[in-house]
Figure 1 (cartoon, one colour):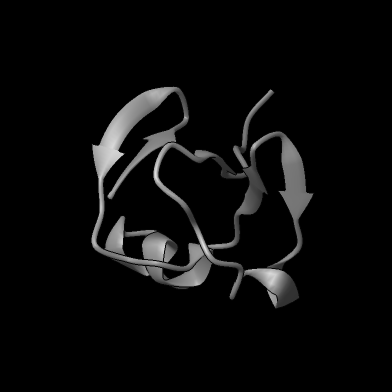
Figure 2: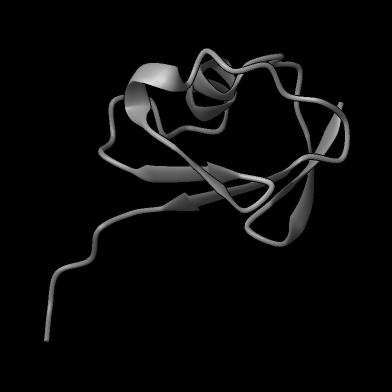
Length: 64
């Protein structure tokens, strides 16, 4: 299915947010996630995705 990942179209086979994160290479990384502008905490990432969902993944950055 096609989703928008951080504003870019991506084709994925995963059907849940957790599986999509694994498929996209985020695996065990500590990230913040939102679907369709709604924050999704880590314990709720078994949420189903639908074609066209807008997924945002934010990773912490170090620096100043």
